[in-house]
Image (cartoon, rainbow, N blue to C red; front, side, top):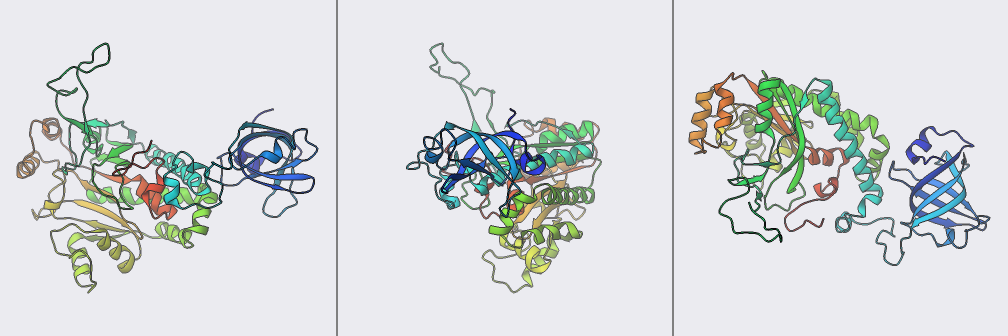
Length: 460
């Protein structure tokens, strides 16, 4: 008898069929002559109800000893359910236990736990409704990312996780090192240099390496883990997170924003269409207006304003911000949210930031003071996408690097892209976990990644 996934059983399985399911017990309720078992196998939010009759040979020895968390095999006949809220139920002919869960020590006995509590048992929290739903939504949206770019002819590039380049120039990188020589007894010999012959770090972005392939293949993208050694314990920051980063040759800032907007709308449409059941959990228990908020993202074009216009709006708002607003300083989360929530009530692109607060690779505008950069802000979240048109002019890029006192030898290969067949090109990065926060309305980013890495916390 073939094992059936509960998601498929509830969607397509015919009645009066003998089937077998494997999963974990969520609840057991006993009546006079039978027990109701709720089984979940992780394939969907819904449980499958099992009717276990007292006529089963192991009813007293097995069924009546089952508790939340036990893993079981159930074989029987699928029948129409007379109860409201479910279409089918499984009448068991056989129940076997793969693994017991002691109710005295199993920590998920209660129906509800705080997210803070669940973070401390990240190895068990996927068994809860909320974290299981997030895992399925994350998987679904990961597929959608690849589908979007592949359908548009983009080529996936696997950029390195270990790098010698600081893309953002902030210096908040995790150092990677290893001995060059290891004795046969595994003890380390003293060494004078690193494994790679020079300092190496975990990447903060795959952008610069993606540019290499964009300047040979046109449109490329990378989707992988990135790392920031930033000592920040906020609900919006992680030390390890995933980034989606496309790079496009022969593309200016306007085209870059058009792609970012269509990409974001594609992902929102996907999650509403493909993940409605899991999304309903967050709409019912986290944010009653979640579906309306997401539909609004799809409905109309995003607003576009310049950084200078944004500063003017903020200064004229008469709002007492925690961080003062003045031209030449970076916008804070409170400023970003005020603009897209209170002023425009929709996603907003802000463009043309001062060059002094942006990385060296962004294209300098004609005014000499700003760069062709863009950030996309979302209501309730703030920045979700950051991007720019890259500086393709050799002399201008050299001047910028001199201003910032960058090591020319380290970036010689990057300058070669401008020396040999340079072309206008653009790209952006989307923080995948922040987008997951937006679509699920989760308050803390630690809930939307399987194993969160934050200052002082790396349990697994």
